[in-house]
Length: 242
Image (cartoon, rainbow, N blue to C red; front, top):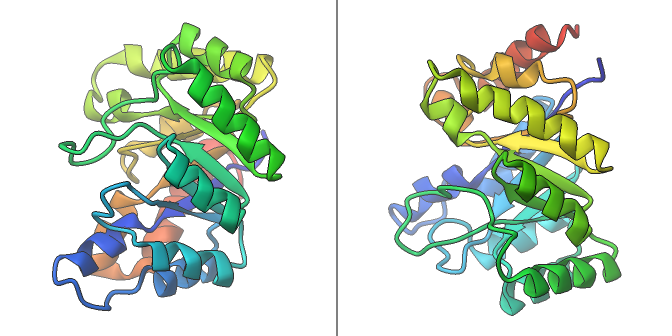
């Protein structure tokens, strides 16, 4: 089974900083520590309301990272223009609602398909890899491939929040296989922790996990380096890797 990549989402470092609206902790400094601990890439979500990451953070990450940068954005002209200027390795299009605490579900690719298709075309023209953050639903996965995305990131919230229900994991397994069959790379993330990551990490068709809140939360007690290494160990054990 191929190795599983781990991208660390540093949004919650910025959330802590914004609680006081000061200059610490610095998400860019945190990202460098993540890289030193073995992260394969860094993810950050620049929201339209700028509730955590700020434009200056995104600029700093783009300039300083040694690993690939995955920029999460809403499908809007403002955000697409930022992506075209910065040219991160990958852009993941995600849904946004102002009242939500965090992203509560996948992008509905059955609506506003022209806008999503145009966004993907713009990003591809700028030589930016494209991903869609979607629910593990067959019609959604099929439409994502039709829209031309390089990858899908499967929303794992239903699995993470209902650990005793076998159906969300089965849906992730089926969607992962479908996505690969349709020629897309398959990523996953949302609500994953050291305690629940193993069944998702064991899905052979998934090649990348995006994890943030759990790692930043654990880092409060043990530091980023150990938190990342614990997650990596849990992933590797599930994957049968060394």
